[in-house]
Length: 487
Image (cartoon, rainbow, N blue to C red; front, side, top):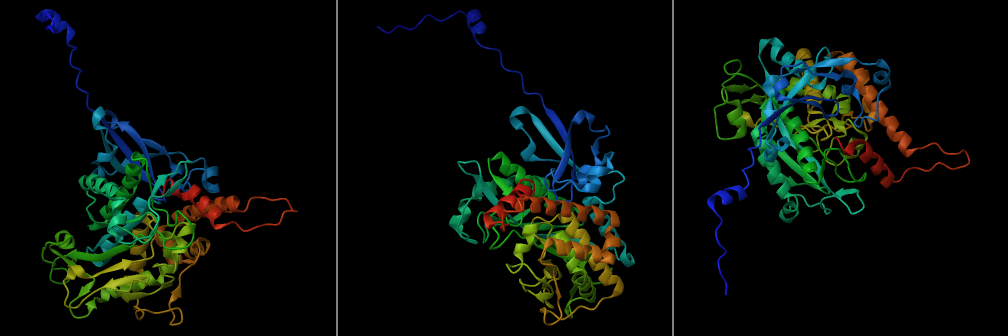
């Protein structure tokens, strides 16, 4: 018969129960991070107890290629010394996706600049925004938001990467379901760091996703976009996936990843016109008590807006080098990306799409710069935009008629990266405004990347072997090697 075993004594039972594991000690770390010319994060992670110690980084790292096998000649030969990282403590944030709760690890990130290097993207952007604010003492601020497209990739059995889904189905619900678990996690992780995601959907490309954000003023907008880009890639990597913002990850034909920038300029209430009243929309909440400088209740678009836009169009060929910083970007031309410097009311084929209604609320008046690829660095796009717009304001440039074509006199935009770099170097105003050192370093980086691709796609051959043009498959492979991992 079944019998209960005799119970052990209390003393013996106490010895048999293992002691409770000690609580996991809390560990805090701080990521000192700079953003290079490609919007790639470069960082040193420091235990929080050493947060007040000076942190240094090799200054030449700022100007490496998109992969660090690509080094511009000047940087390689300069023997660049270390530079002190100067943190902007207002950007310190806990990054939820970088913490390790099961290990008691909390990680904070603070954006930094390199001491003495004024050509860094964030420093450059901040300087131009300060010039806009100081212009004629109007205290104008740039409000920017927009959308970023990227491609989600999964690994194949042979270790290569492929689009997470194949058929291009824009807005299709069932297509979106294939990537929505990632999007839900992304939105959840981004809100605590101030990235307010407004919409998530699939786009018209293989594996392509589009995310839109609520706007921010000034440097916070570029910080937000950068945090989103870096965080999206980090979260995808943790999930065994890849997210890439390179313009064309797979092939040459078809649409690419766009990074359209929505912008308007605002001033303190009472400076120009009646202030925007607070409302329920994200823009109304952000701009309550401010005046939209772009809006005119009489004409829809103010004279300030027209002059600013005229400056942007005048320098658009040079801006293309900042908006389309990689070779694949130029495949976007003609695929919902502009090929001439023009503008139009609610025109998605224009270089700058304008939204302005006479009777509409001031917050509904804005412009959309449609040139940028998602591969573009947001700090550099904003810096270039503001520099060009300031030229329009200072010279009171006249805005050309809307929807001009090449035949009407609209300036043709560069159709390749080499041509865009030439336009940037030839633009004397932008060269001086952005800084000759920045222009030199930026152009040298891009030329080093062009050389890398040329050597990959046109390797040395014996004289007896006829040269052949690389296939689309070979081109795509070389592009992915250079850009996919870190852009």
